[in-house]
Amino acid sequence: TLDTDRVVLVPGGNRGIGFAIAERFVADGYRVAVTARSGEGPAGTLTVRADVTDAASVDAAFTEIEQQLGPVEVLVANAGVTRDMLLMRMSEDDFDSVVDTNLGGAFRVVKRASKAMLRARFGRIILISSVVGLYGSAGQVNYAASKSGLVGFARSLTRELAARGITTNVVATIHRLRKSFSMMSLSAKPRITIGSEPTMMYQPIRASRAPRYSGLKSD
Image 1 (cartoon, helix red, strand yellow):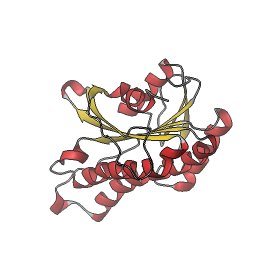
Image 2 (tube, rainbow, N blue to C red):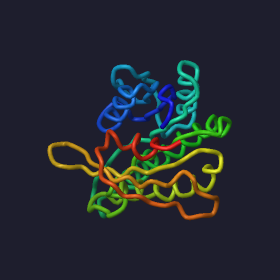
Image 3 (cartoon, one colour):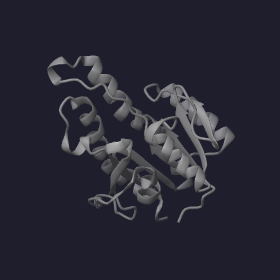
Image 4 (spheres, one colour):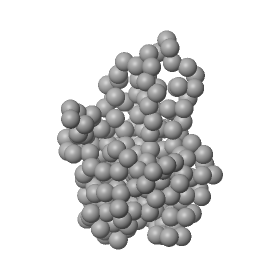
């Protein structure tokens, strides 16, 4: 298991599933930071202002976190938006803004986090996706494209980073009744060789527990 003194960053940890994830990490004893454009993360977290669509903003946020807590060792890329609309009515901006936030934002935070992870030869990257990215949903072509893109992103990251002790996992959430969340963990096994096919694991567990279960269960 991981040393709970490690630094965790949850972009978008000011509300919803990101808030619950950050809260769980705090309860487990980690040092936790969240980024948000507004609002605050749960008690016990460091909240830093950042816009994941802006690389300079992401860099500034990481710099502040590194100064106050230390290098980010566990990244839960959670920030995301929706602009639901049927295809024929969806504007270019509706599509581009969702993809730029959900997929481009993950790219920006992972790229920035990977610098310290590569130096340390250790890191845990967890990408929050959705079953919509796997199965599709009417009125959500933009959201589905952004969330399915995270799976290919993760597969490529395992080939680049696994040999340096950095694992990548994808968590696909499912929205259930009574505003509760469940998830399926698509876990790219950490001990793979470059060029091999990541093993995918599907198992339903509560979303707030997903990052710890899928990305942090093994060293």
